[in-house]
Image (tube, rainbow, N blue to C red):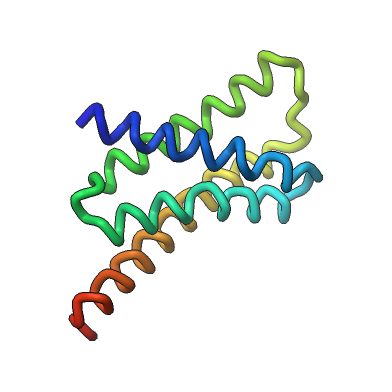
Amino acid sequence: MKSYFWRYQTILFLLYIFWSDFFTMGGPFNQLFFNFALFYPLGFLVGYRPNFGNLRMAYFSAFLFNFSTYVVAVLTGISIDSWVIIIIDFFSLILFLEAGRLMGKLAQDNQRGDHL
């Protein structure tokens, strides 16, 4: 179970490092696009490869990762402009992680030939 957690944290950290230079502007739309770039791939992997881990651990890892980014931002002196953006951030995390999982499951079913 711990290996799933660290696997998810590593994926999220690498995606964060990769995408952080592309999404430098502020605002809710930028936050939505950034969350899509982070959490959709994780959800897709969980849905596409069922042996990749479980959904509960993916959600726990994503929430912890997202929360820790805010903690680091506050500790380093970066001000949070609006609490609305934080609410949008966590809501979009759920939305994109679940959308990625559903699309990954659909892609895996189509590859096996299990059509709806």
